[in-house]
Each structure stands twice: as structure tokens, then as C-alpha cells.
Amino acid sequence: MANIYIAYGTVEGQTAQIAEYIAELIRAHGHAAEAADIKRSGDTLPEGYDAVIVAASVHMGKHEGHVTDFVKKNRAELERLPSALVSVSLAAHGDAEGAEGYVEKFEAETGWRPAHVGLFAGALLYTHYGFIKKHVMKKIASDKGSLDTDTTRDYVYTEWDGVQRFTEEFLARLAAPRGSG
Image 1 (cartoon, rainbow, N blue to C red):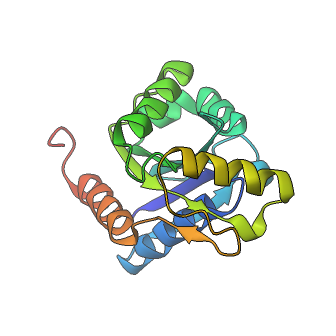
Image 2 (image 1 turned 180 degrees about the vertical axis):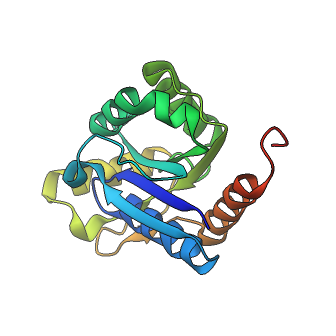
């Protein structure tokens, strides 16, 4: 049984939901998992974990600064342990190249090159936004050709079966003998 730490950064809560879902899946496969918001749990990777998944959302073209700081500070451990990155962005909904570009920027900034990366679409949570952000996000969606501009409702784009596949692949790599992955 592996003990897996899922460190995440979230702005609007979708990345937190994805991290918690990953933790539930890991537990359902007989392992221990803890999902922890880096803002609350701090930027030090706790001891006693066999693997780490770092999850971060993209806003204004980059991953959250506190997640970047966490990775920089814990890079040696992330390289030593089996680890993965989950990148959550609206670009992952139809703009794979853009989503991959965010990961490339993150890798360049942190120096960490995770062996396993999951790109997942986030959400447009219009009903949670203030007046200005709601209209800015509507304009961005409209400019990108999206029809999802009804600000009286939310749009969740996360493909949960993709999150499940990512998690199961990560667990399979964890179970594989070293050097075979």
C-alpha cells in the first residue's frame, strides 16, 4: 500500500475538487491519500509519503505562484519520489497546445520535469464571480468562439473519466518495478 500526497493550489475550487477526486480514487484502489491545499498546509512536503501529485490551476496564463514556490522548494523530493503534475486550465478544453504551453512554462520556471502529466479542463463558474470578473470571463469565452456565455449558470468542463484514467495510470506506474516505466 502506497501513501500518496496530493498538494494542490486552487483559486475557484475546481482544482480542489479534482485533487479530492484523485484522493478518493487512490483510496478506492487500497492506498492511502491526503489532498492538501498548499495555501493552508504550507510549502513543505511532509515526510512519510511514497509518491506525490502536484495539482495547480492556470489563471492569467500561469500556474499559481504558491504552487510554483512549493515545487521549487521541494524539487529534489519530487525528483526522488514517483511524482506527477495535474494542470487545470480552460485551455485544456479544446486548446491542447495552449494547455501544454502552460506546463512547459511551469517546467521552465521550476526546473521540475514530471514524468507523468495530466491536463484537465477546469470550469467557468460565472455564478461565483463578481461583476467585473463575470464579464471579463464572458468576453474571453466569446472571443474564443465559445457559446458558453450565459452568466446565470456555471460550465464544468472537467472530464472525470480522464482524471480516473490519469490516476489509474499513475498507480500502475507506482506498482511497476523501478526502471520499467
